[in-house]
Image 1: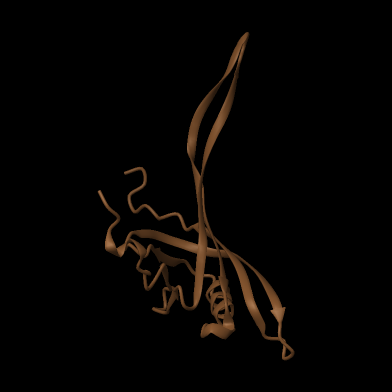
Image 2: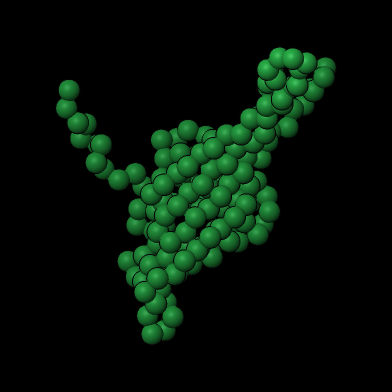
Length: 149
């Protein structure tokens, strides 16, 4: 069993972000590429103390999920310095966005909750040669139409 020919080809869009207003931000190998995706799911488990016995645990709910993307932008290689600025505008809109993987899997609706940025090797005009970033998305939590009915 060999390696598929397309295993080394670049995916044009690693993960598009689609806003409610129809704007799309594409993470792309030639613009702003992330190299780490970390997804965490939190569950609420309550402790029930019992007399003369070990405490019992009870599953209560799914608390939420976060996705953290970490990556790099090289402005002088065609990406420009506006990539992080565009992401900040999406976050400032304070509306959920839809995340989709490069393979087409829809991950659902998420809020862009945090953006961390570092600028490295600044040129004389203040333009960085390299920008590293970390984005944190929180799961929106889908609404249920017929709760309790």
